[in-house]
Length: 340
Image (cartoon, rainbow, N blue to C red; front, side):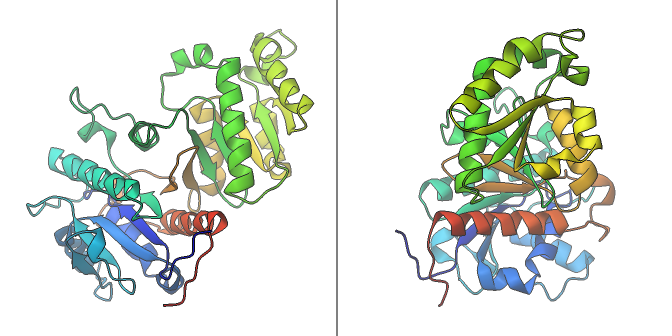
């Protein structure tokens, strides 16, 4: 049983400094509840934070710049410079410099996670386009972190008060989806979801709905055999082992009738099948949680939003929820003495 004297230390990788990452991070950390619950460490650059503090008229946002994780103060918001040179901040503009800094922030946070000096990571949105290259392939946070921690498999798990949706397939072209939906893939994702719902969310006997892949879940084979040949046998196998797994359900009717409220988790077959209903209902409060990793990682469910960057128009609800969820999962997985 691990008991620590200080509050949980949660790292926040700043993402693209020309997007809304800094803004939503700063706004979220102004919540007085969070300051009492966690020690925040922003991986970015003090100049970028100072820039946004000025243009957003957030003069009451205070932070302490530290050299590294070993120097953090548990009563302050800490900022670690991940690049030596002062970054050029250009709200709403895609630049290679911002991409390099976003990756540097993520990489430094990974180092501190591996040395167990961070208890969780919250990733602010970045732009894949100014990071991905032949030298540095970057599909997304989920895949990058899965590789970094040598996890066999992970689950992109979208979480809000109203629903929890996991994906069998994630960031891939739609034309490749059907071939990737195999019995083995569905089994892997179901196992991760069941384990996460029990351990991370404290649900002893989770109830899971599995969606079909074809319109009307194949309509008894008329619109495809994937449900009968692949998905249904997996559901039966899990049921036979005593798990509460049901389906496959037609996605349109399932969400149209709000059936997600009857389940602890929903397993969607591909990205937009799960993300469209999730963001429709929970865009301002949804969280992207990566289940199956040896570390805790959450993220707001939105992107860089270049169109409103620097305009003081970004809603920090999703970032705030991501930080709270990271804290809650830490607490469920450990015992803490939060008195200093």
